[in-house]
Every structure is written in C-alpha cells, then in structure tokens.
Amino acid sequence: MANKRFTVEPGHGTRSGYDWHRRDRKELPCTECREAESAYWRLMRIVRKEQINANNRKRRLTVAGAARSNRKRAIKFGVQTEWYSPMQIVELYGENCHLCNEPVDLDAPRQCGQPGWEKGLQIDHVIPLSKGGHDLIDNLRPAHGYCNNIKNATMPKISGNLEVAS
Ligand SMILES: [Zn+2]
Ligand SMILES: [Zn+2]
Image (tube, rainbow, N blue to C red):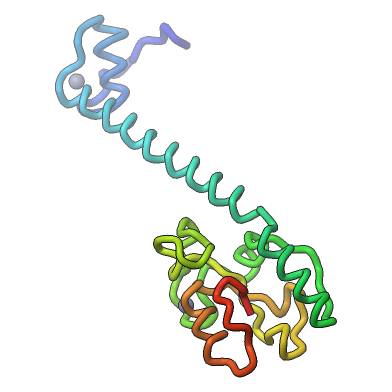
C-alpha cells in the first residue's frame, strides 16, 4: 500500500498531489500541494483541540459536587432526592437555559463570582426545594447562573446566599 503508485496523476492543491510529488516523483511538492497538506494538519489540530475541550467539559460536568449539596438541602427540606450529574440534565433537556431560552456556556465557571459565571451552567429546580419541589431529575433544568440567581432573588422566602441554587 505504501508503495502504491498513482495510476492517474492527482490534481495539484490536494493531499494526494502532495503524496504524488513526494512518493512518485521524489520531489519537493508544489506550493498548492504543500498548502493543501498544511491546511489539512491545521484543521486536524483544531479538531483535536475541540475534542479535548469536549472531553474536559464532559469530565467537569460529570462531577457531582453541586448535586451532592442539593441532596443535603433536599434532605433538610424533607423532599425526595436522587443521584444525577449536571451532564445528565444537559443531555436530557438540552443546552438552553430554561428560564430565558438562550444557550448556556458549558465552558464558563459554574461558581458564582468567577469571571463569566453569569452565562455558566447551574441546575435549577423548576419547583424550588423550599416550595416542596423534589430534587428529582424531572424537576431539574439547565439554567444560566445569572437567570437562576435572579429567579431565587425574586422569589419570596428564599435564602439570600447566591451560591445556593434553588
Ligand atoms: Zn502539486
Ligand atoms: Zn438564562
């Protein structure tokens, strides 16, 4: 396979052309073919970077830290609770904030006060725990940190602590 010759001369400005120059003609590829080859690798670098970002994001959103603190609060309010990760909620209900319908930035920090947290992901209880809502997946939706905190702030008898999701 490695020594296979091209039966038809491939067009220039392609990766096949690049191989043809180097392998069949044993010459420096022309500018167009060199450009095609480097464009391919430039693209591969971007694709690879995007894959790494997606993996990091997934790993980060699988951490169940916030879910654990919700669990404690659910027990305090005497409502039902179950295990979930933020990623599960996003996969189930999509990447839009259910309060304003705009996309959530899954790469933004999720903790209040960190730069960009307003657009970051928080998991909102549609019916707040304090109003008898359960900490169950069907009562959870993705929300912006900002929208979630506005909702909490405008709801009576809710903890003033911004770190706590409703
Ligand atoms: Zn060429
Ligand atoms: Zn929102």
